[in-house]
Length: 331
Image (cartoon, rainbow, N blue to C red; front, side, top):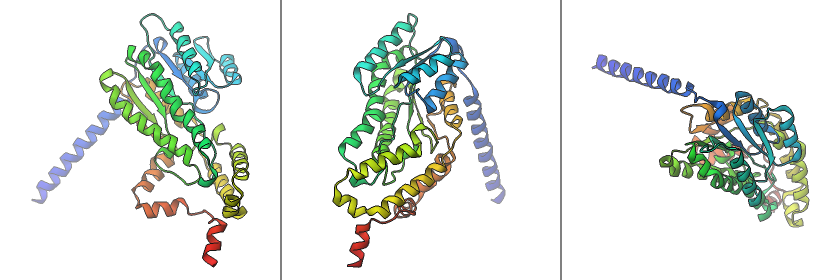
């Protein structure tokens, strides 16, 4: 009996190992003819999008790089080949998206579509206590991070069908967890997860695949401490006076301190994320989900496996209770 069990375990181990090796082999296979493939990337001014556009250009792809600013366009035009087309596009403006679609169509050869669309454009919005945030804060983030993504995808989907291409949507580990001081951003990234999952199922029979990049915490222009704090101070001071008094200076200063300690620990190796983009675009059999970053691969999955009460306590471990809570306890 013991020998039989050992034999079954050995056989199972062999099968699992063989499967993992076969899967690894499939992931190494690449598509060909990069120079005949066209890729559209949004949010190319800085960070992941900027690096990705440059590396795709180096690999020989025909790149359409959508930027929000003239400075972003100038940067890409100055350092990339003529095969890269940099242009202005605000993903929250329908007219910009339609103009970009006409530009892309005018540059594509006859009977050629887009090989890949990378929905990278995104903003953080304001990080602050929930009561300090208004609908305007939520709309600001949702307009870029999810509604802009939806509008761009819907507009360019016919071109993706032509080439049996792929869509790469940038989400975040904050699409899986929700710290109390960045709810608008987390809502938008939860929405990206839901949209991407539903879109993937819808497009299977249309020969278009959908892939999610879900990075952990990385140091980019978006996560610059000074700009995040400036927004937080501005919006806290704009909150109703009773809300400011309830939280108090000590809780606000503690929030800023914790925020600074988190930002200081962010991963500076942006290539971890860009490499996932590259694989999703160039692999013959790309993954459906990429989780670059040690926190994304280890800490967040572990946190989600814990009981809710325990994961909540870990999340608020360094938080300072509002002044109003202390007043209630002492009465």
